[in-house]
Each structure stands twice: as structure tokens, then as C-alpha cells.
Amino acid sequence: MTATHTVSTVEANPARGAGSKASWAAADSWTMTRRELAHWARRPVQVVVGLVFPVMMLLMFGYLIGGGKGIDGDFRSYLVPGMLTMTMAFGLEATMLSVTQDLGKGVIDRFRSMPMHSGAVLVGRSIADMLQSVVGLTVMVGVGYAIGWRWNNGFASFLGAVGLLLLLRFAMLWMGIHLAMVAGRPELVQGVQILVWPVAFLSNAIASPESMPPWLGAVVEWNPMSATATAVRHLFGNPGAVGDSWAATHAELLALAWPVALVAVFFPLAVKRFRDLSR
Image 1 (tube, one colour):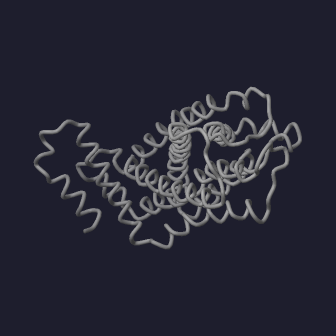
Image 2 (image 1 turned 60 degrees about the vertical axis):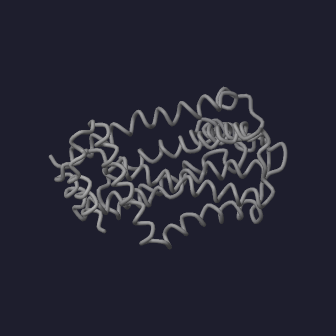
């Protein structure tokens, strides 16, 4: 069954007339989510590569490159939460490419011509991405456990840490969706994706700011990814870098504030950009 046929089937359902506008939006968003999930079955290699890449990064930094300067405790216990945070930045190019390819092929224009909620395409795309992020986190936690990493503060704190990680992903996702629509073409997405790497590595995910020059350490501590990495280390009960700056001592607050601020900026920008596509 094609995505277009699926949407048409949902729209043709007479039961929709009795529902509220919110239920229509939810039904349309779920239809678009199913469309994105169906793409996974058609692109299994891309899905596997997306799962394997962060695992390779974890094993490479944990066993080949090593580190731990300025870190009090086992480096792998410091590294795994940091790599979980970095994983939230990986794979955004797949979402961005999907958006630009739909734009280029006119798929979004066809969806917009149907009697469906205008935001369902973006919401469906975001739900599918978040589901894939949950799978990726599950794989990374399993690999971390296999190499000796443990969380020490109970299951409630574990869920809190996972919630902060997914909140960061949600914020970066909407930033990526907006930038993808601004870029407009798949070939330009690669240029935008390159910007993710400096942001990811300019954090305390794999190295302590205390081991860096003071000016660079200050920049690193205020990185949104650093706030999340520090906060999840606290929740996991893992060792963290020594630091007494405001950003370091209020990491949990920043781990909430940064993603909320990013969503507040880029979610309405993405929605507006999407609505302006047909003008």
C-alpha cells in the first residue's frame, strides 16, 4: 500500500466527520508516521548503519583512543553518558534528507492538496525520528552495559536521564527540520550536517573542560550538549568532570532550558516555513 493510498483511505473514512479537529490531526499524523516507518523496511542498510555508527564511536573512544584527563573515576563510565548524548546529534541528516527529497519530488505538495491536517507531515516525520532515537538509545545502553558501564542511582533516575536525552533529540530534530526546508535541496543538507560535528565535539561528551584552555573550557561548558551530558551523568551516578562554574553546577536546569528554548524558536519557524511552501 502506498503512502498516498494510505492517506486517502484515512481521509475517506466517514467516521472522521464526528471527531474533533485534534483527533483528525492525530489520525493524519499517525498515518504519516506509518509512512516514515514503512521506509525503514525499504532501507534496512541505512537503518543498520545509523545504529552501528554511534556504537563504533563508543568502542573507538573507549578502547582505541582512550582519554580521561581531568576525570575523576573510570573513563568509560564518563564516556558512555557522553556518547549517549552525542548519539542524539547523529542521524539528523536522514531526517533532513527525507524532508528535502519530499520537497524536491513534490510529495509534500501532493499531501498538502489532500484534506489532511497541515502539520501532519512534519509531526509524522518527528514521531518516526523519535522512535528511531529510542531504538538507538536502547542499542547504545546495551553496548555500554556489555563493556562494563553501569548506572548507580536506580531506575527512576535512569528514566529521567533518558527523558533528558530524548528532549535534546526532539529539540535538535526541529532545528534540523527547519534547516532542511531552508536548504531545500538534498545536496545542501550535507553542508548543514557538517555543522553538527563541531557542536558535538565542542562539548564535554568525551573530554573534560578542565583539560582544555580556560577560554575553550568555558565555551564547552555552555554547550547545550554539555549540559545534557553532565545532567545524565549525575542521574546515572557516573563520574563527571570537576568544575565549579555556574553552567557546571546547574547542568540539570540547563539540560531542560536549552532544549525548551530551541524548540520554542525552531518549532514555530519550521511550521511557518512549511505553511509558506505553497505561497
